[in-house]
Length: 297
Image (cartoon, rainbow, N blue to C red):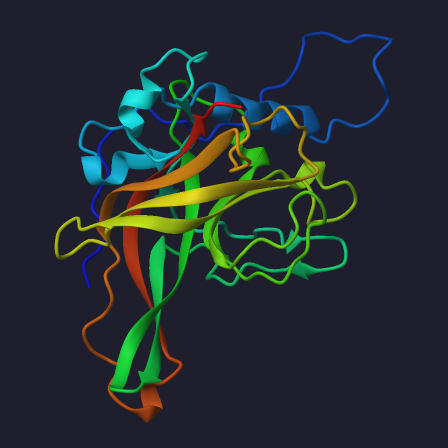
């Protein structure tokens, strides 16, 4: 098993203490305690506002080619177009993998709350499970387990107010209109527990998508991916904290998994009935870019 490489130095958001507020006291201030809600909301806004405006130079064209209305485009070229052009694109947010959060809140609704199924405070990993199939026994991919750190042009204060993680959405949770029940698939979450509106399942945004393209990235690394139909599901976060990433006829959401290192399936340890159900965490590293493509209304 290969450990994930040491990541190159980047201009990324640094974990920082909450930046507080205005100086001095004001007799007219509310008596409500400062629970960090303003700082958390601002941190989420800043992740989007300071997201990269272009993709890394090493992304192969196979990852970037998308078809809209029967016409093929390159996401890099769409990102270079003026914002008023149609189609055009912009990067909603970008993250790199870090260890899983120590105490993530559950997600779902007030009626259905599900705890993320991953090891707490563990290195980012691709998780495999030993299963029996028609030809014998083999490791099957189960889910990603990772924390996320924003890639931004400026440091983001108050990131300690947020929980950011990457996991496999289990399905079966109806968020109600207009979202409904998202499909099973890889999910990325930005959660602000202080914005929980009285329930730990609120105050979060989920991104859920399905794999559309896979490009090999060396024998020791999981492939690069493009996920399409990336929907954004909000619970309790202000509506202006992200540009919408969704597929609704006027815009299409994509997630790109880039710069992958490690994470390939084990080659041993799954050879008999006694091994079935065993899980293996294989450390990996990756960057995730979320791209909105604005199409003609």
